[in-house]
Image (cartoon, rainbow, N blue to C red; front, side):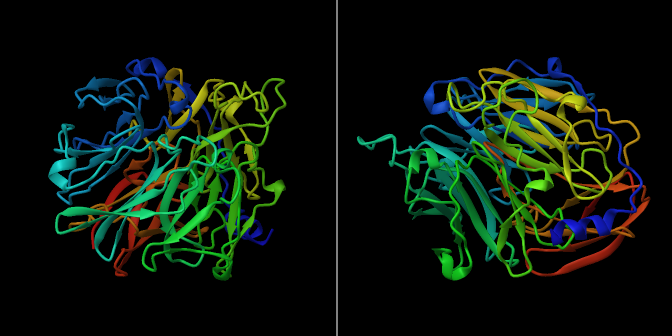
Length: 493
């Protein structure tokens, strides 16, 4: 329990702990549903990013058998449909600046050829596989992450079941791919063994080393598989000799955030059954969070269905701006799996002053019973409170405005850097007040079926000032820079 006690020590004096409340504004979204047969039981995420430079984040939602849809943020939590290349059989979408021109592009994963869409800075997108020299393949792709290693873009694509294997689907997991950008083109290399990846994340591990974490679905690898950690520099998977412990679960999504205040990011792994939070230790290893921490969310907290929950997208954010990270978990049965809960409301776990998480989704108004898949917490109306969007399978998308009364102060931090890594993916941002330091890493990937590119959100509680320090991917440091609460700042090297 040492990490939890440390968090309580850092923040115990923080006086603000507002009750969280959201307003359902789903009617402000264009009609959109993630649908399809068994090959779309998984996936169904949303990319959140500002594609026209007005600071209002747009949404690009995967559709499964329905077309993917781009939704322009018109302000006031109203969204309208915008043109997008016709793409069906989509499973997920992630924003990134793949060509280093300063405009955000989008990686769209599909059942079939994955598609890089080049953005023009005005929410116009064109297919760019040929122009960027990217081979989209023809696999069933379900996981994505990107990093700049040695100054060059590396994109990891996780593939699910090999549909061409006549002995499948069980024990027929496809191999994954690493796409490295050199000489203005991508070269692909096979990353195997693959164990049916459903989420990937390039991020610093408990030792502070940038690595690729892969969460895999035990339902299909059945045996001889596990969660994986890959070192892209050494070109190998970590094993017991590296302190990497074998973990097997029905992996769906990854979320990463330092919740203990020690600068090392914890990792949330969603699953069928327990949602596993791994605490990063000073020895560079991970240990399961104690059950008393309140993060396992293993049963529905509403209704009378006592079967295990199925967790998908997980995301940390400070939804009441009290200075402590909270956690949203999208839940829903795969389809009709009888051993798992059919009525499985989403979870919103609020972290208290003692570091313990408590379920708040019912009171907050976000305990949807739809089969949720992807989601995002992002400030969609620029009022300083993270709002919520949820993608559901065979049910309409949901949109919730955060209207939490008496919330704390906040700060939004954006980074801009020179090409090729214009969004400074891999940078560490530390915000310090008298109550301690909070650290976030700029990443691309994780979640389930989608992610976002935008300002890092920090709740400040009652604090009106904070110091911001940036450790850039190349090791240079900027700051500390004094920042006023309730502002949006942009820093460059």
